Length: 177
Image (tube, rainbow, N blue to C red; front, side):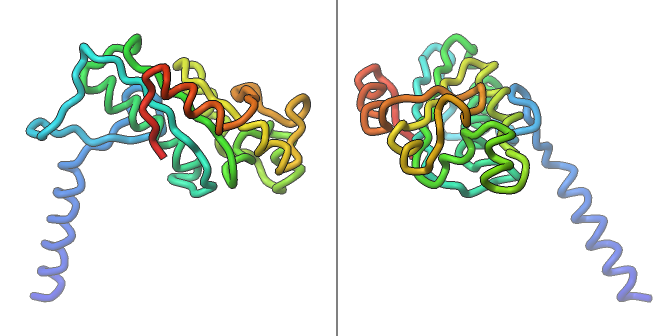
C-alpha cells in the first residue's frame, strides 16, 4: 500500500511539474516551440533588425521536420514573442549537402525517397512569413535535382551556397550553422 501511494505521489508531482511548463508556437504555428522566461540575461531588442542566415546542410530531423528549418521557426517564435516586430526579422535559409532533398516537391521527394516530404508545411509557413529559402545549385547538380521540375514552390535555386553566404554577410546577415 505504501509503495502504491508513493508511486502515485511521484506521478502526481511529475504531472504538476509538466503542467507548469507551457510550450507554445505563437507565430509559426506547430513548429519551433518555445518556453517563456521572465528573468534572463539577454532578451531580444525590439528596436534592432535581426538578419540571420541559416546554412542548412544536415538531414537531421526534429519533431518530424528538418532540424534547421525547425530552428528557423523557433527563432521567429522567440523574437516575435519577445516583442520584435515582423518588419525587423529577416531570415534566409541556404540549403546544400545532405539537406538538399528537403527542397524537393512532394512528387519528386516521393520518387526519390519513397515517402512524403514532411517539410513542405513548415516551408510554406516560413515563406509566408517572408523567409527566403535557397537551394545551392551545385548541391542540386550533385544530387541530380532538376531545378525546373523537382523543386517545391517555396525554394529558389541559387548559383552556390559559397556565393550566397558571403553575399548575405556583406548585407549584414549573421550566419547560423
